[in-house]
Amino acid sequence: MKLVHTNLNTAVLSDKYVFTEWIIESPKLYAYYLQELFLQQNGEEGRFVLSDKEKELNIAKNMEIIVNPFQIEINGRKILNKLYAELDQLSKSELMYVKTLELTGKIQEYLLELEQNTEYVLEFDMDLDMPALFKSVGIRYEVQETDFFEQIIRYIKIAVNVLATKVFVFINLRSYLTDLQMQELIKEISYQDVKGLFIENHERSCMEGGMRYIIDRDGCEIY
Image (cartoon, rainbow, N blue to C red; front, side):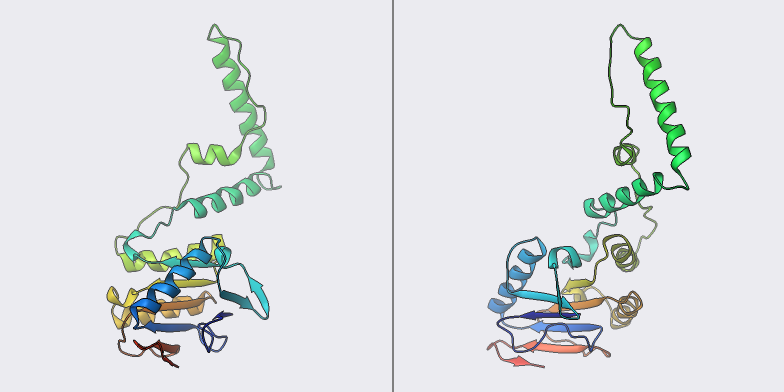
């Protein structure tokens, strides 16, 4: 997995390392690269290129950017939509198909009885929209964690499994986590076989096992 930019002399993410700590000390360049990365993560055009074994990947579909670890949404819209789609497929599978037909029949029977107890002539769709049903009853992932670090770890697991996320970008995360927590986070990223990009605006103690890429205040690249 590689992440490159046309203005940079080396890859921001490399196949050789699980993670990169990208330190951008120049405020102007820090804002420039972050803005472009955000735009591309939202589907806009830009000069970052994400690839896997020479195959270019869509940044919007394969990258998650986390600015505030306290606002991580395990039950965000994208994740729930993917979950509902997966459950919808399961409801139509051989394992659940008969049960789904029984449920559909019961709901139709109930709606007809409702109609009979009114003065109206009603109509409704005979096909049950399972994702709409999941949404109406509020199906979601149970949130048990009270510690925000545990929420980050769980979010990574869910995003990999549900969204097939391949790159996690964290902005100034070392302002919130200890060095020990950072190492635990890196272990989880490695275990999930994805890449981590830690973007910081000033240099801290070096973390083992990754690449450190610095752009100093004068715009010089050090790697």
